[in-house]
Image (cartoon, rainbow, N blue to C red; front, top):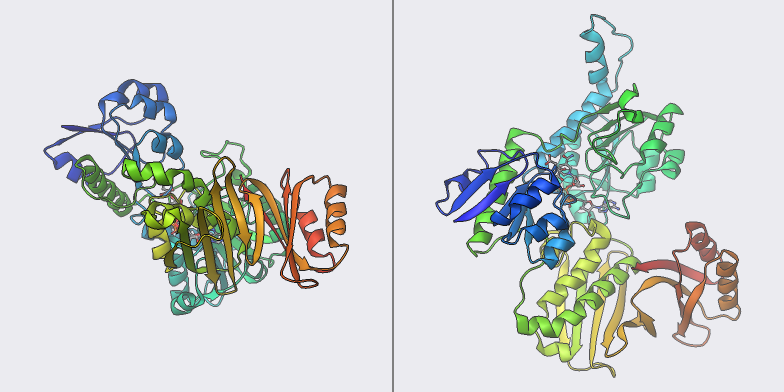
Length: 530
Ligand SMILES: NC(=O)C1=CN([C@@H]2O[C@H](COP(=O)(O)OP(=O)(O)OC[C@H]3O[C@@H](n4cnc5c(N)ncnc54)[C@H](O)[C@@H]3O)[C@@H](O)[C@H]2O)C=CC1
Ligand SMILES: O=C(O)CCC(=O)C(=O)O
């Protein structure tokens, strides 16, 4: 008999498949502390949670029989994925079940914002008949910016179009063809903030999206913008938003999520007359909670019975013999993918991976998953992408993956070459694992290099002219950016050249801008491989 612990409120109807199963015993025990969970988790084969239970390493280590953790929802930020992977516990989620519900909540928030519904309600129920203070605006003919056109963002965009809005969208994975079919005009974040009357965010919270709307964006924002966030707190800088509202730049905001949940009672959103809030209710409908519970129940049963399952968010099992041979390449593949994603602009269309030398005879499928993990994490967030789901996520986004194998290694015993095509450009990078020296990047585009896959790299494309290296060194030095190593390469004398610097810490944005402005410098890219 498998024992399943449900530690957050999850729909009974959705759990029926589990409760009806003759080989499963379901125990519901919600609101437990970490200590209480640690005390009982050892009896259970599976743990089902929503977002309240924080599934820590301590809990998982005490779960000596734990085989699977099911998250009834999308975000798995409350589960220590690294610990689960290292302890061999499969983590699954239900990414599709709450899409429409969350989209409808975002739309409801936008309408409530446009018509001051919460504020008007509060006054009316106190007996005041105030029709002057709550004059709203129509949605029709307004420009609507959607940042993040994944599952929820595209549904929100479709509804906005039905309301007669002109939709501008930004998502690194949205192709022009698909956007056109949806009726969305692709635009940059800058174009959206300068032109939209309403704006909503539907991205994960990642290093890239953290504060993607902050003071610099508010400074150029169209006056009177209304902003919605039903994705994750922290995508929009909360304090900068309050300032922008008080300065009359932003007309109002509607938030379902906060940087820290629940927010402190003195959080400035809670008393602001132009900000409306809900307590992370995006996914809270009967339908969504049933959908996500059905989805996780089905997958948990499959995992416990050793049957195929979908939506795993951590590691798949790999036969031990193969694992011994390919495991040393996991990091190299991920870092090559990550570096390529950081050097390439535009939505990914095609990724070609060439495995050569001793890798050519092995099953490289797990390595491909790590390459894709490295590439997609840059856009979708490391929390969402892992070696299990990276292939699925790439296919979902119509990314064409081409695998090539060859025995020619240009002098290395193994070599992995990635090339990535976007609408804007094609770039490529090669790496190898050198016995005793670890992972190295050995080629960037046409230039042979020898760079470790760690720390901060500065990639500077320039014309091969005297004096450039000195100017770059002086600029970095005068801004306290220490150069650890430097390599240069060129195609021919006086032609195109590249400079690859490893620096001790991330270079400030202003320094990167100054570097880009130096004569003969064509492009500057900072690549973080920590
Ligand atoms: N309020 C709530 O209760 C709920 C919130 N959510 C949150 O909503 C968000 C979106 O969820 P889904 O649509 O299901 O995810 P998704 O993965 O389908 O879509 C996210 C999209 O954001 C895009 N993206 C990543 N970085 C970007 C950037 N820098 N600029 C623009 N786009 C970027 C990705 O390419 C992707 O298409 C997530 O943060 C999720 O956790 C989801 C469900 C309920
Ligand atoms: O379970 C919930 O209500 C939170 C939903 C959510 O934020 C998610 O699925 O990412």
